[in-house]
Structures are given as structure tokens and as C-alpha cells.
Length: 337
Image (tube, rainbow, N blue to C red; front, top):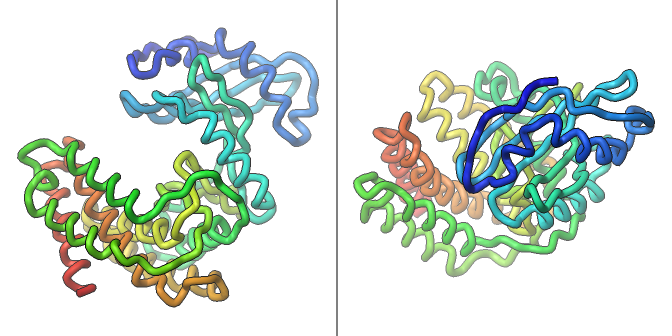
């Protein structure tokens, strides 16, 4: 059994217990049989054999992988420790999406439980190959088409989510990220405020569109290939909203990667074109497609502006990347008139 990992985060008071194999064995052993499938039908004791920190965002969340040993089998579970009280809402949202999308069409991690005293969300662990590296390499159209299929499936499902997210919410979130930027950073400048104001004016008269399930944090790293089947991760922020939001965010992240790593620029541009073509073909009969490109441009520019704020707080990129993202946002707005 892997020993307890020493890590402290005052915003995550349940972290020490969540990282303890001994403490988590009794909690997760009762949850493991709740998953469907042959392995979960095996009766008998389960023991947490390994705990792995997958990603820790100090003050906000910690993603944890658990490996459990059972009678002749192993099972992996995914845990996400949260700083706030969002867990029950995320659990319900994921449940509605899972119920609306057949597993043979798209894999979405099945929610298992929420442990309120730890603020720990427990879900199925999906193990697959990330599509992002092959997308960025640009040697094949397959990754972009695969990602487009995954997103089109989410947008076309009939999950009736409780909360909504619109253009004004996205602008407010972008403004919050700009406000968190260091005082002397480009995103805290009058230029960034001016770009946000331009976007706000364009959002005053948005097209009248129908709302669909949207991911709200969609980029290439959220999609896996699980044995030839697509899998979509990290649905914490899913809402009902404009599908153009996810497309714009995805395209903004392609621009981001090309600015971070110049060698990926050609692959990102190819992926952009193939993704848009494939997505539009898959959603050709959907409502509001005639204004899709216009709405995508708005959300892509908004995402570029938000990312400028995000990366102003990351030491590795703060000296050059935020300005380049502001340049890209401004160029989009100029081109769009």
C-alpha cells in the first residue's frame, strides 16, 4: 500500500485524509460496487492500494487517482477535492449528462458519490490516450475529426441541465480574470479594458439561439481515445448555453498552443479547419447553424482575452504570452469589423 502523501492546502481541509490509503479504504470500498460492469459485481473486501495526485491547483482543487485491490481484480476511481460547495451540483450535472448519452456513443465518467465532509467528488476513472498531442502534430485529420464528433455529441444530447450560461456570464468571468492580473501586466491595462468593452457592445444584441448542453472548459486535452471510443472529461462547469462557446474556447486554445510553441502552429491551424468543417457537417440539421461562425468569433475573442488574464499569473509565460493573446484578440475584433 502506497504511503500517505504529504501535501497541505488550507483551502482543502480534507486533503490529508483524501490522500491516506488507510483512511480512504473504508470510504471507497463501499462505493466501488456501485459502478456497473463485471468487476463491480465481485463481492468481497476492497483496499486502496495506491493514491496518486494527478493535478493540484492550490487553493482550488486537487485531482486524485485511486487504485483499489479486490478479489482478484483491480479498480481505479477518480476523486476531485474541491475548495467550495459545488460538489453536489457537479454530481447531479454529470448524472444527467451520463443518462442522456449512450456509452456506445461517447464515454463520460460516471459519477459515483460526493463525500461532503471531505468535499470529495468520486467518479469513474477513464483511462485512454489523449488526442491533444496528435492533434497538435498535424500529421493526420483524424484527431480533429474525433474531437469534433465528441463535442457534437455533447451539444446534440438532450440532457436538461439546471443552470444556464450566456454571453454576459462569459464576459463577467473574463473581467474577473483580467481583474486578477498583476498591476503591471498587459491584461490589467487600459487596452485590455477597451477590448472587453468592445466585446460587451457586441454582446448586447446576440442572435436568438436555442440552448444546448455545453462543456464550458472545452479544449483538446479534455478528450481521450479509449480503445477507439471517444471520452469527454471534466464536466464540472457544464451548463445549458450556446454551443459556439465551446467551439470558440477550443479554437482560442489552438491559438494559445501555437503562440506557446511555434512548432505546433501548422498543426493547430490544420486542426482548426478540419474541426470546424467536421463539426458543421455533424450539426448541419441543428438550429441556429446559420449564425454559428459569427457567434464562434465572439466567443473565441472573449476566450483569448480571458486567457491573457489567466497566463499573466503563470510565471513561465507572464512576460510575453499575455500581450500576444491581446494582439490575437484585437486582430479578431478588427477582422470581424
